[in-house]
Length: 326
Image (tube, rainbow, N blue to C red; front, side):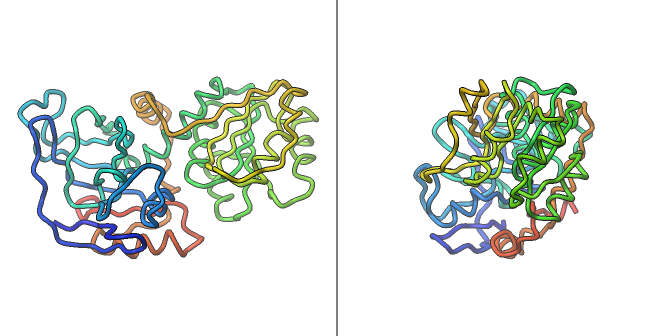
């Protein structure tokens, strides 16, 4: 079978390797679509957040179909369309253990969730990144039509937050410098896209909220300036949820605003325990996240997909797809 392998730091290639065998509690999955995440680039560079060993097959945002099951598997059968969680105990699927960027891969029954029939393969491979945005809305105490939300960053996670908040009835403002990403945010329900470089950003948010500020702020960029501005645009009693990753950088911010405004600050990592809810939300809300996917590459050209993510700033989400899903 073909597989994308990260051979050593900075080097990736598509290789022909044997189809893996499965244990009694495992299933064999045929990949249909795999998303490339910024964390995959961190993995390729050899600086992932937990210990890793090369060579490794990436791919933690995926959809696929079960083609074989171990004799102890009870809840799944051949032909089931599935997606799967990527943080499994101390292991990370697609990082410390090989992932889905291959024609076939092995997974444990406990990691998997059935993909609703209303969601196609592309939507299925977007469940993992969307689950992070959806989880952020839960941590923000379930914003609704009474809330004005500001989202910093219109990358895949931020766009998922935009879509989830609009489906909840929120008014959504987005702060994003890239016009194409801003256009995507508008397609997914943002009312206004603001330039983070504008000196009048805080004033713009205050004008749009009649002086009150945003009742909920999601920081999904990890940029120092956005983390600073999040406190500035928040309303009195506002909820600020930090999603974007920025570890180690010292960031100047008026922390006194946390007390002065009685802000509630939450940080999130991943999407623990919410996959079933995420799938129900996507199925019942009718959200279509497919506009987030800006390019698709066949598995045989997977190295080109990696190159596109690394070097083409117009890309938002790149998918590697099997011929069966085209």
